[in-house]
Length: 206
Length: 160
Image 1 (tube, rainbow over the protein chains, first blue to last red):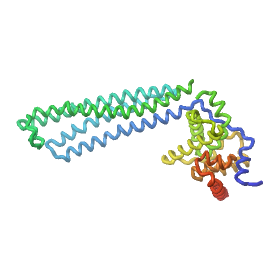
Image 2: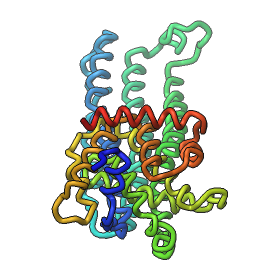
Image 3: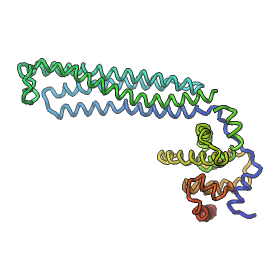
Image 4: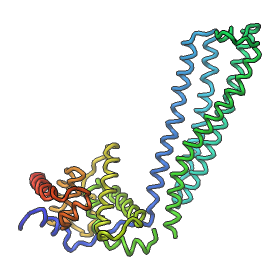
């Protein structure tokens, strides 16, 4: 027999009936893989908080200000809290078990992700004034009687120390804007991708 | 994708998709994922088909594009290499015949080629003309003959 590759191919496929894979549950694996990918990304976001908190603690100590250890604890504390909150959110995402319909699964994941992101955005924005307020109170009592220029080492800012508290709304507003931009870009990207999958499933059902 | 679309436009050409998927997959699961992805891609791009070429040529093109794109992504993830034997289950013969064994060997050799070489030889084995191969791959028609000869020589060495 001639064993050319052409013959191997021809004879190999001669009189064969293909067993065509079932495409009924076309989107099952696709949806699960996509959600798994998103959960891994979310896991990273949560677990990075611990090294971030440790680094904040070390950095504050490295600055060597008064009561550096206490400030280190205060600065890194939100990171620890966010980590535990994130872990709970992660669990709630994983808990959304794939039942039988890719469609329902994706809709549930999308809704959950939006609510988690919204909560996190509000949490970050509200954490800022709380933390900053503590710092400002401390600075205020420590530096009372000095001008802002003297505290910051900048000439010309001859305002009383009480004006330090103006930083509170300014920083909060800035953080709110940044958080909102982040929320819109990251969340919209993820939810848009899920929405595409959902739309395709809807079309498949037609 | 309506079941009508699948039955009318894809299922009659399932053999093409299966043959290509087999050359680009490492396991049965892999194979099924590829098959599904190709079917979806054909459905998604159905409006881009303008009957300038045959529908089967369009299917070849989409199938190879999907396989090569996924292959690139998977290469990054260092896909576990699983025995090819499991993929031969897509053929309905109960016991592997001499022909099937030879075909498996051929596939094994084909899988050692680069993505583009794999595509070219698959199309050649499917008796596509040089012009059609060049059209599907998107390359210069004059190089195809030489390229095929080189790939065939490579395969002969790999099969030995």
